[in-house]
Length: 133
Image (cartoon, rainbow, N blue to C red; front, side):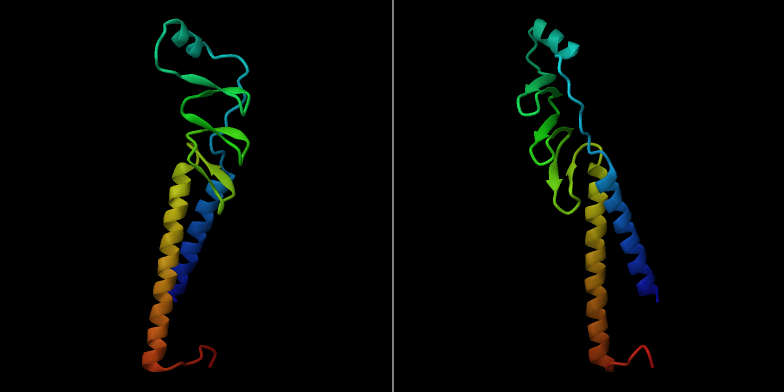
């Protein structure tokens, strides 16, 4: 029974972390039509560091730490990738939740494989007995 309880708790933890990744805003930025003041000031002072850049694909000014992605058709702050399993972009706001999800799903998979191997070993050693008898 302890094995089943651990499996249920692991599944619940994985589903919670999946919902945190899928339902949280990854860091999508609003459109900025005018060049931000800090970008103008840096350009006027002829500083070489760029804080904001124009993005032709999104038709917006974006911070240098943000990227445009075609899959989500948006500029995402701290963009990492688009995850096909969660169906969302992974960015600055949901990256920790994504790491928690990948960790929990791996633990759950290895735990399930371990229980299956233990069950097969037990059947080979003791023979099969129906749990319904």
